[in-house]
Length: 154
Image (tube, rainbow, N blue to C red; front, side, top):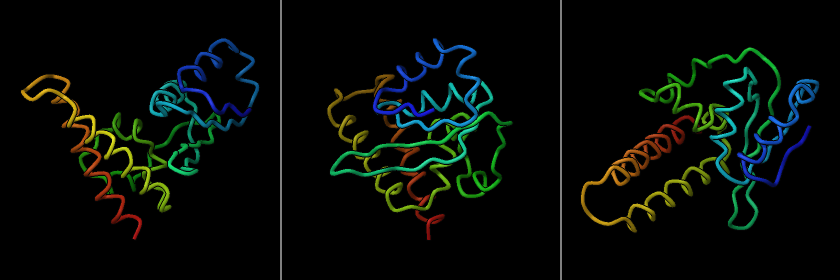
């Protein structure tokens, strides 16, 4: 089954509506246009493993693609070694298979995500607010991910 070109929430809605029919497909390919972390969490919560994840770049657009299948999800010990201090939940959100993908397109995608967060932070009103704190925390995490990923990719 291939579901592509729509947001993660729409993909999840389709999978929910398909109910047991979705379970008859042993292998899926997804290309969510928005919020890939939402789809990753949903899949993980249902015991569906993302087996591969990559980024396709077209012009200035980044497309996260993933393959998934019914499987016992397993943690990769390399994630703890290459990305110390990241929680399991954060790793799922960032994409365990992306974090272990050394492709240059993945590094560019991570840089793009960091730049978007930094631009957003610059647009927020000054002063301590919960949203500003969350964005600053996300920026810190993305900087750590980029640093760790560049070491992993070498």
